[in-house]
Structure formats: C-alpha cells, structure tokens
Length: 150
Image 1 (cartoon, rainbow, N blue to C red):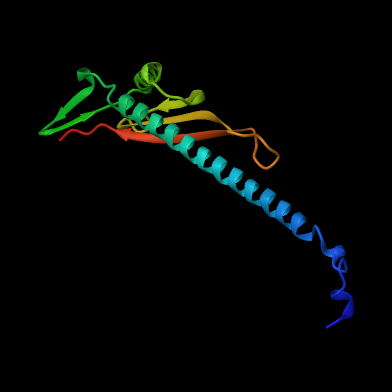
Image 2 (image 1 turned 90 degrees about the vertical axis):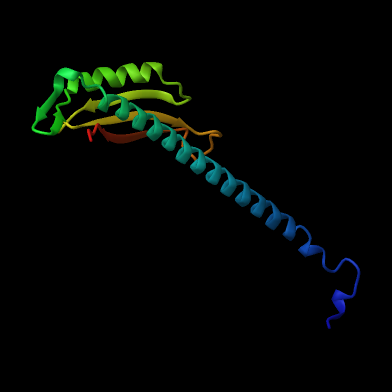
C-alpha cells in the first residue's frame, strides 16, 4: 500500500469524477425516455389515422345505390363509381370526430369497381421538440374496403 494514500487529502484529484458520470447518464436516460415517448406518440397517431381511413373506406364502399346492383342468375353484383366513393369519403370525414392534425383526403377511388381505396395524410407533431426528435412528421395511410353480398 502506498503511503500517500494514507495521508488526508491525497485523493483530491478524483473528486467530481462520479458527478460527471452521473450527469452524463442522466442526460442519456432522459434522451432515451424522450425518444421512446415520441416514437410511441407517432405510432399511436398513425394507428388513429389508419382507423379513420378504415372507417372512411367502409363508408365509401357502402356508397352504392340500388340502381348499381346487377342480378346475374342467383348472383348479385354491383359496380362502385369513383365519384360516389369520393363524395361518401368526404361526407364521412366531415362528420367524423378525431383529434388528428391537418387531415387530408389524398385519394378516394374504386379501382376495380368492387372496393373503395382511401389514402389519407395527416401531420404528427412531437410532444416535446428537441434536436433528437423532429418537430413534425407527415404520415400517410391507405385503407381498402369491399361491399359484399351473400
């Protein structure tokens, strides 16, 4: 054992080294918590937008009229019109209650005449803005629904 360790005040050059380490780990931990909270918020916002798009697609898929139903033997079929799908989607979004920001109907159409395809866009705003997390992220989802006779 060295004698200078036994003298009082000999270990003064190691004071504060744990303080810097503690500060570093606190900043790292808070940064990690911020990123996880923001990622969770973004995920939930995307799920909310997808739920809204899914409901819009379902309402648009049911936008046919009785005149569009065709009887072929014992089989019924219908032809969806893209204009009707767009009108039904716009009407549904006008009535829907949601807490999403800057919701936009990008596309509402019936590509095959049987199903309605809806593409929507919204903007996610970060709960807390830092250099680690962007302030806003545009999100876009597509949902498809089909009206079926049995």
